[in-house]
Structures are given as structure tokens and as C-alpha cells.
Image 1 (cartoon, rainbow, N blue to C red):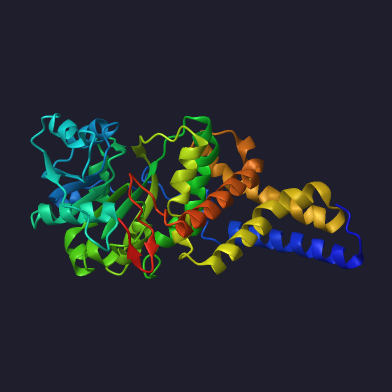
Image 2: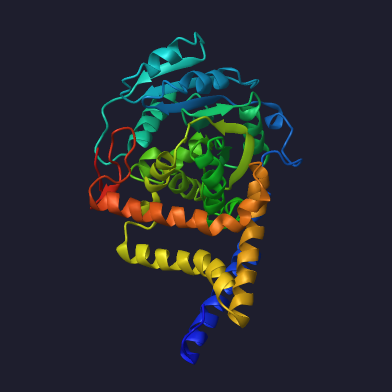
Length: 393
């Protein structure tokens, strides 16, 4: 890239330096989001038995057409080695594939299947199902484990969640389940999915007491029941498409929360194709921007400046612009390394982050296009994205 004039050279140098400045801020002034230090496997994990008593817990599992995964998911909950009283409620959200029958067929007296009511206006499907589970659980449990139907848990998952909640005085403890990373599409895109999530919601900042910055990962959330009631219950976030982060922010208003990576809980949902990963990303990407065309345009330009300028100018520019761009590209690749190690991927994927980010940018534009067409937030046959502050079913 050889600018035609001195003015063009100034612009190129300015863009390269701005991109470098962005990466310096992200790496050194974004709460170390990329270091993957917030994990439930750290040696500091509380070991005491809930101050001498293990509180009663009820797991609530919303499920809609989950026949492929429900036996393993519910089976892993049945197998929990939790010393206290533990019950499991599966809320069957109008499944047509025998999901409820598979759960009943496990033959465990811990499991109760609740037939969900038709979706109420103003609710997303998952939150409507969870709310019915909360009602069915009643006042007996001190904690509620809100977990997805595609999560398989290690036998000590619940014990570790409760220990942290009680010993560390957290009203919400949430785990970012380890996502499946087997197909080519998953190996290419999934580590970045978690990495981008951490960039938006730095776990260390979420976990810090005394601030209002809250978030959670919807696959695994242990919440104190009384704190949830005080916050207004599930109804307080009933229309949120990105429900886990809305829920985390809600619970942060009631006390300290904790969010971390884990190997104890794994997602068993398959994303074997590029199309299936794109559908997962685009389902909520535009909602993250508040359905704002202006924010969409700004985000697209920001992504280009952050991810495309470094490799482009690093290869084709000269002088100061090239050195600045290479520096930005190197910081980017460096910051991606801990997440690549967590998922067992080659460090060579680091320099490929610009291409991966381009895919995500395309999914964000796709999300906006689906919303315009009235197909936003599509999940299991339901359109759930907000339209004029309403939720379509």
C-alpha cells in the first residue's frame, strides 16, 4: 500500500497508530480479560462444607426439543455427589420429540417433569420456562441451579458451586461451560466466541465487589432464591434475548456475583457446520447493540479498525504505519493465546484472529438483516427478538 499523497500517508499512519492504541488499551487496561485467570479450578476454590451445612438446591432445566442431549444432561445432574437435599425440575417447553419421556425414563426420584404452559406475551421462551420452574420449586430450596438442557456436569459441579456461593458470600455463581470444540467450524470459531464474551464482560470486573457491573453465563447459574425474589424474580428480565448477562446485572444489584471458566460443565450441543455456528452467533448479536442501526454502523467500522487494519497495513504499508500495525497484530495474537491453550488449540490461530473476527462481523450484519425481516432471535421455531419493545412468539 503506497499512499498517493502526503495527506493519504498521514491518514494511514493515523489509522495504524489508532489501531495500536486500541490494542494497548485492550491488553493492558481491560481487567486482563484475556488471561483466563477466573476459573473454578483455581486452588483458592472454597473447600468447606457450606459453613457446616449444605443448603437445599433445586435444579431448573428448561427444555424444548432436546431429545438428542437430554439424557446425558439430566443424567449428569442425577449423578451429582451433593450431600444436601437436591431436586431436579425439567420444564418441558412444548417439545415434540419426546424430551419429557426420555427424562422420565431415567427413573430417578430426583427428577420431576413439569409440562410448560403456552408461551406468555412479553417473554422469551427460555425465561418463561425457567419462571415456571421457579414457581414449581416453591420455597423449599435455598438455592436454584438454572442450567441448560445441553450441559453435562461433572459429579462435583453442584458441590463446588454451593461452596463458592456460601463461603464467598455470592448471590450468584455462574460458570462459562466449556463449549464443544470438535468440528472444523467449532475449532475455528468457538474459542473466539468465549474470548469475545470475556472482552465485553471481563470476568475479573464482574467478580469485583462494590461495582454495578454484572454478567453471567446462562448455561450454569446458581442463584440464591431469596435474592432472586428481592430482585423481582425472572420476570424482571423476561424479554431479554441476552438473558444471562441481563440476569447477572440484575443479581449484582443484590450482592456479589462470580463468573468463571470451567472444565466441570461442558456443552454437548453440536455446531458441526459454519451455518450452525453463524446461526448461534446471529441469534443475539444485534440485540447486543440494542437493535440500533447507528451502533451497528459504528461497530462495523470499529471492528474494521481493530481487526483488519493491523494485518492489512502490516503487510502492505511502510514505515511507521507498518511497524504500528505489526505491533497491533502481535498484541492481538498474544492476547488470544491463553484462550487457545484453554481449548487445546494451536498458537498459530492467534494471527488468524482478524479472519475469525470478520466472520463474527458478518454474523452481526446477518443478525441485523434477520431482525429487519422479522426473523430475529430465531430458536426452535420461535422468533424472539424484540420488535417495538414486544417479543414475538
